[in-house]
Image 1 (tube, rainbow, N blue to C red):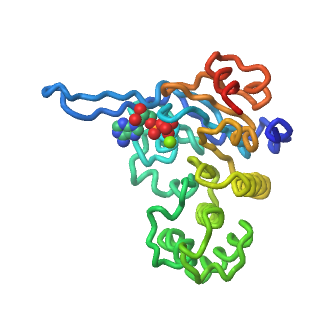
Image 2: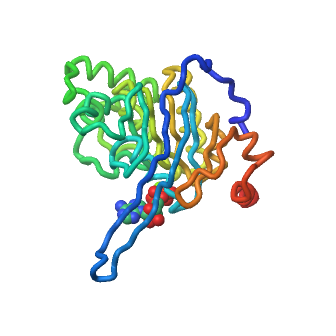
Image 3: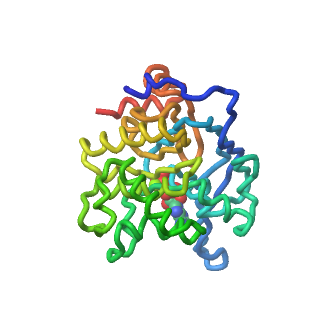
Length: 270
Ligand code: ADP
Ligand code: MG
């Protein structure tokens, strides 16, 4: 368990980069009148703090609300109630226009960064289109793209190539480079290594760990795989039915779990 050996990079004095209080999201679909109303409480009174430069794992089985929480933190979706304090502002209640300048500093990494992207766009374009749209000089964006590719361990030649020319692991490296183009303070990774072979998973986890040390970025690392979370996270939040039922360092989760559900999860690891 490498997670148990991680040394805190920052002191308490740096304070939390993210503070979440009583966050709630319930999905409603169908119609009450026709008896088809479906009410799904996905995130229920979730609270936690993330210190600067640390990684919080969010672990739980399918349907426990992990992705919903991720979408709330990145404001891809609006919460019903609760607070999300980031850079001293409650982003949960900011309007889209008010949030726009901050959006760049909260970046998301998905399972396959290219699932929803134009397969005819070069990597250079994929990396620079967002930053240029946000006002970065195109020549500078190209330089920055080369630097980020180097940081994630790809050669600069990648810039003129297309997504289909890369393996899953390489595509995830590009996805990480794209997120880093914005110099984010917070990365939210949702099942970022779940689609990869175990050996490639380890490489990407190592990469994320190194990037965190080098850039000081804070991370919320969502995964259904407790074993994966333990390799990279300073703390792990265990979710069940939309609630955090336990939050602590990997050493606690594995050696001294406080909730019955965490004990079940640990026992289920082969
Ligand atoms: P996880 O990522 O842990 O698998 P999700 O956040 O995707 O969990 O889902 C939490 C719950 O919310 C599940 O019961 C899921 O079926 C439901 N859900 C997720 N997205 C939607 C949606 N867009 N509309 C309605 N229900 C949803
Ligand atoms: Mg999910």
